[in-house]
Length: 253
Image (cartoon, rainbow, N blue to C red; front, side, top):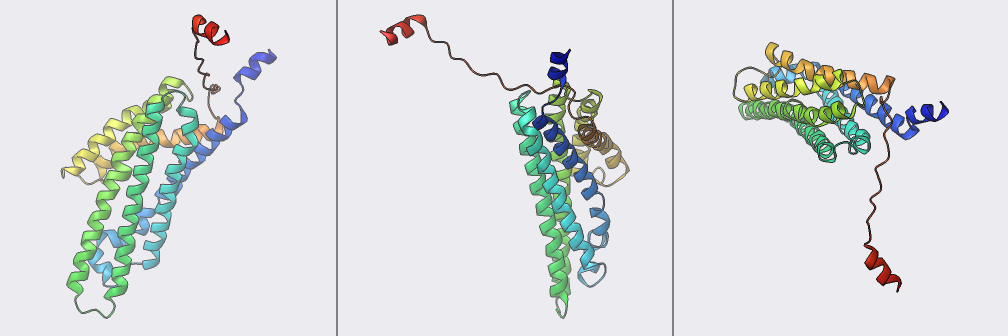
């Protein structure tokens, strides 16, 4: 009985990896929710924002929160990679790469927003407001595209990579990665429709098709914090290179 209990008990590093990854996943939710609200005036009417409407501090806080969102997203990949690479090395690398690319898109969007803030400061006393407002409109359009290609498109890619590993390995209950496997093509489809002008990313259809991915990430984060992994993560098997008997004998002689 003691041997069985020991075999089914997670090692401390594995448990720490699960908790860290879960907390990072929950962090992406905590930090991503208020960002759009803080950007509201800037994104809805960039021309009016540049000319003095809306809150500059709100935009700056939104930028900081998005930076934290990007960093916690990378954190999920760094925490999980040593574990999931044992069950699918190529998909694990794809998960890390897509998370990093998603974070890069978020950072690019933050740069666009902060540039609009700078334009507002430059607009004070400037006579050519038409040029400033046109530049603000262009930067907000850039921000919108980064939001589509980052949290939109890349979220479906990293879900496809990680959910397949989680489903096959049984590290978490399979209903959780099943949500990711269903949500990935839905979100990819929604992003494609948005790309071609079918509907806005932040719209009824867009949000509905993003819901399974959001549920997958939230449930995965909660489960890993509360339960860890369902099975122990065994060490990678050592590679043994067989030496032909004749060669060994010749070497000894």
